[in-house]
Image (cartoon, helix red, strand yellow):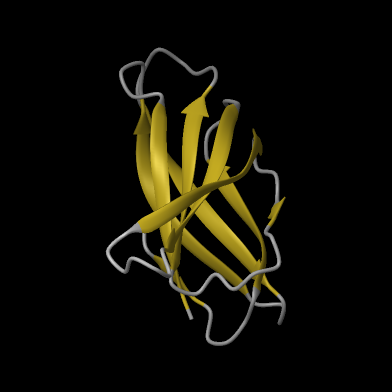
Length: 120
């Protein structure tokens, strides 16, 4: 996908919307730079859920991090379907940031990874 530019705001919660009428499960990971080894990233599991649930982020700065959703569609038609995937972020200042991208769901590709870079 793309990036969220925070402009001094702090993210509160994030949401992933997958178009279509099928159910989906997701897990959310945070990738942050290792403070001791600049070329290394640290991955931490934030949580998971089903459908378009808002997920509360831990109270920490996320500028310079990457959020990655691992998404799997649980049930869908046998024919491929192109849907919109939307990542939303709500910030402390009330700002709602959003990124959208198309995805073709099929029997051969019932899963995807959604990456969003968070910049300060």
